[in-house]
Image 1: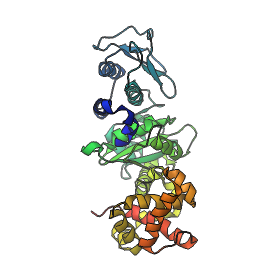
Image 2: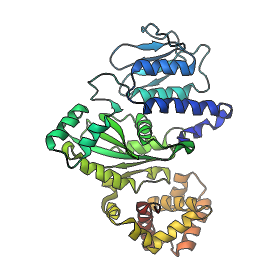
Image 3: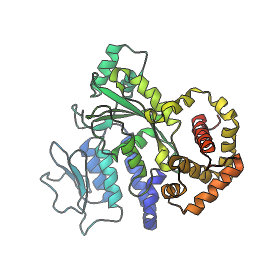
Image 4: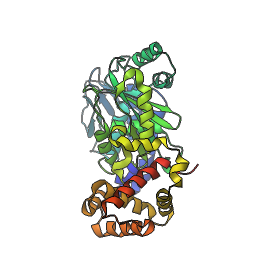
Length: 378
């Protein structure tokens, strides 16, 4: 979660503590179903002050820093709080006002609160799913009756459409990546309505989404969350599958994994790839990676990426192709347009293209898609 730490630059003296805060909640999220009492007690101990949670329904939960339950009538003095979707809040009760890391603690407490085990009727919440049930739903070999039963046990409706997301994560700080935790972190920031089920399947996080508004794509909300307030969630990439009947979830899962091949990591807005938006470009995922890498344009992009500053050149190319304007690309990258122009000049020199020419710009965009779809050599 290195991207999440970008906004901590003003807290250098607290950076070690901030890392421990993030590790604390990642540990809670990866340990399985989490009860509200466990989350609040754990947060109070971490923050060394009373903490509380007022859910949308049910009693208020409060604990002191020593792990002692407190009366649930309400906090005496809130030093900081975070709202939950669709309703509810979490808070800290620190004497003397908020501490320097309280905002970070509350953000992660709110994310964890979205996936706590609050009983069997959780159809409107984000929560961790049983991997065995998720695999049943996403399998194309299982009987329809078995898939329907698994959907119901997950709190999903077999008769309604759903979408599947595929989430990949880069290892934080050299440790092993946990795409399930990455998915929870990202989705906890979206405020996505409807039934959202998250599970880790191998090296990917799988997310099943049934929205109250039907089959609308969550890609826009996901991009907003990736860009985030305070910096990007660096290293997280998402593929969004198409809307399908729930009993055909395997098709959306295939589309999500195909779309994931076109996702980022640069510029940040491309970290989310929607299969429907890709359109005919998604067919590149059907071409063997070796054939894509054998194309001269793809090989030239790969060679450029390996050079010093090459990744920044490809970032500029992606932004320019996506906007069609040097100044708009500079705005996307938060750079001066002259810096973007210099990077694009390196691309043109390396590949022999003239990016102001519409044909060459189309070739560049297609080559960039193929480069991403090919992925790194095995």
